[in-house]
Image (cartoon, rainbow, N blue to C red):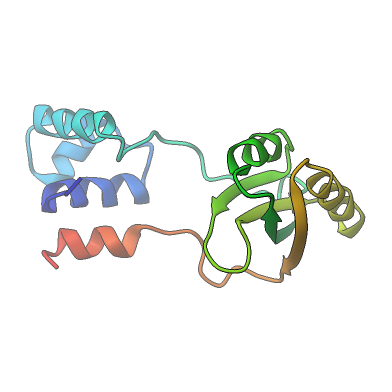
Length: 156
């Protein structure tokens, strides 16, 4: 789905201040309240705007360790493995990949010992053949969409 400059400006505003109401968005964007509401409804219906989850600091919740694991799995079992990984609370994301591994898993843990427990759960998933895990030391570039929205908002 393509977005236009107004969509991008609206999404930038909501990215920066997700708790803004429709009326305040319309005031800041200089468009009618109905226009903002219609844009938001359309963006939600098309699956681009998926909601407004809070941005949580997992370290503040006690999960200060982040790790990534590349998993090699039995051919044709991606769906089943993903379902089983989703049942592990500390697994935050799973991406199907190309290259050496089949799945990239982001997981969190409270400590090194806790990470070992999580890795053991991942390795115990049926059809996981091999794993390679790396611990994240820092996050110099956190997940972001703002630069892409800014490019569209500026007409680029």
